[in-house]
Image (cartoon, rainbow, N blue to C red; front, top):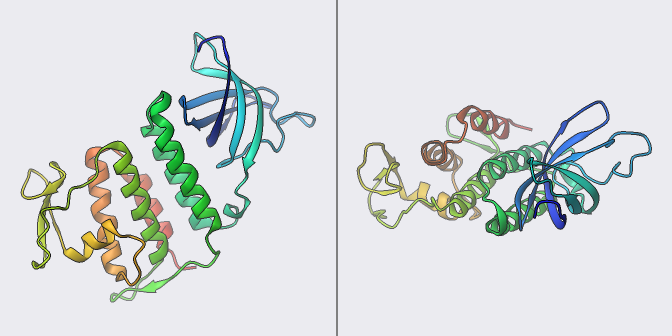
Amino acid sequence: MAGEIIKTEGIVLAIRPWSRTSHVVTWLTPDHGCVTTLVKGAVRPKSAFLGQYDLFYTCDLLYYARATADLHALRETMPRALRENLRGRWRETALAGYAAGLVKDLAPANGEAAAWFTFLDSLLTRLESRGGTQLVATTPGGTRSCASALQELVRLEMEILKLAGWSPDFSGMDPRADWTPFAIDRGRCGDGTRTVRLSPRTVAVLTRPDAPNHAPETVEDAVRFLGVFLAYHLDTPPDVRRSLVALLATPS
């Protein structure tokens, strides 16, 4: 691969400045995992790259694979999906950014990333195609939370856990009991060194987050469970997720 011109497709995960006129762009590709490229002269007035990439774009790209560094040279890129409707929808954009961060940290290299690419491409398309109005529900305590956005977060994180091989096993759940012990450390029902209580209603949210009529407080229980589970098994940064949940729960 080193010294070759690589042709592939990629989703823009992150953009950061390299100099006054250049960018470093991180892409998720289906066949090479996460790839970081240097885009020289990206913001010059006559640059061929102007308007050709931005966060969450899916693009065709050509890059020169360097043998001695992880920073490759971007030769050409052309957008295939701009997802312009994400701009101005702050909940969808926040979820997209969170997903991109998880994928950047967790996606494997080479062809094993194909399933991650399909997941992220589908997620971004789903978020971009949603209506601009979010469902807002009132919990018994009187606080307002965006149920639809939190359910989308549950769906996103359950899909990430499946891709990472860490899906929680709820097969031991007793549907007749008010709650069943769940061992976070073992990833299944039962007692462990880190045990929480799960109700059948919470498991219903976790396994069917898109189903209608989930109670807002039960959705919030599912979100709390996933926060503990992700931090334990995938070492995700809790502060980032806490800020995201608070943002998603903010009334419009």
